[in-house]
Image (tube, rainbow, N blue to C red; front, top):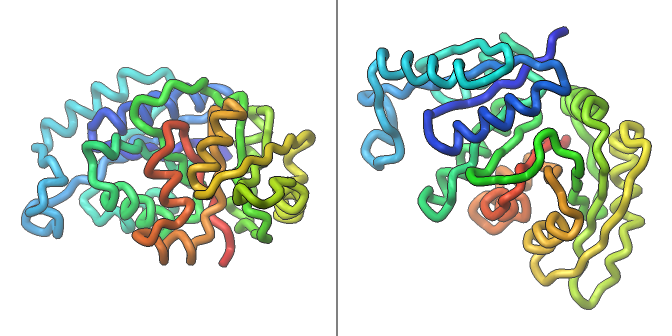
Length: 273
């Protein structure tokens, strides 16, 4: 089956950067793009009064999509729908069967944290497709040559669909792959347990060579970002334990904090509960 990436656009700088990133990433995988705009209706939209949404006419939307389609080298299909975000993603995934769902992450200095994280929550609930979040302003290499996976040493297992998508992604890129483990400053940062859980998850069979990188930090999410810098990561992989990630979004969960503060693209892989 031909490979495609589903790219969400709301015509912001963040979504434009996500589109450019997806376009550059598509070449080594021979992938096409599906550019999806979810149109919001002012009279029906629950966010109509909080200023988060910019409304556009049909003509403005068509022109904006045409400009962005013309800017990419990949084959692209454009689609506009009037649905809730979760319904739109569910239908688009069923129709196109994308390898990745690509979303731009705005600068959280100008965009509310809760808006960024609630969007992530909605997308993770709607699909098991790996979610790639591209921060606005990121300057990393595309396609990524160095990928770092944060593992906490606790067992995890990926859904078959997620594992297969990850297999296709990694086999096409053949990156340098590092597993990082963050320990408290007073504890050992030995990565043996983290490496074992990655191997047992099914990811190990996809990775001929895996490096390890332990680090110490009082706060795990800051340690992950520190490790990303130390390993010169072009892409961070996070295991999104759905119950934890979705249930603790506003209670300082590790995945949430990494998503909010990273300047490196993050690929969220949905694990079984």
